[in-house]
Length: 125
Image (cartoon, rainbow, N blue to C red):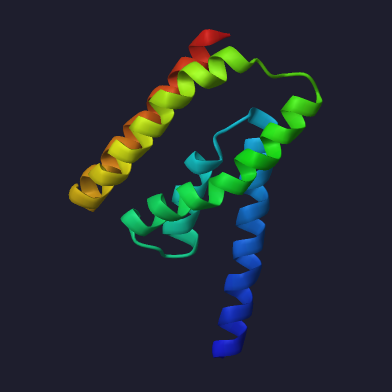
């Protein structure tokens, strides 16, 4: 039974990874928004582990997507450089906060951000 469970978990992990990659590639981001709930609910990871894992999973997706966007001409250096400093500083602060904040608060904040992002996207068009 244990081998079947490991195989099923492996298949779920690959399928989840494909969905996350597709989402990031198609929308230029958002894979983390999909990754965290999949890690928590499907793979039964703890909230903080899911958030930290999502960051690491998104790195190669981001690199692959960035290469494709650059190849297709969707790239401007100035915004990358100006936003890059803020992204690095924010990432460090966020990682430090993740370590200190209770898991329920992290999940609540994440949920609010997902809802806000959805509302903004619907109202924008």
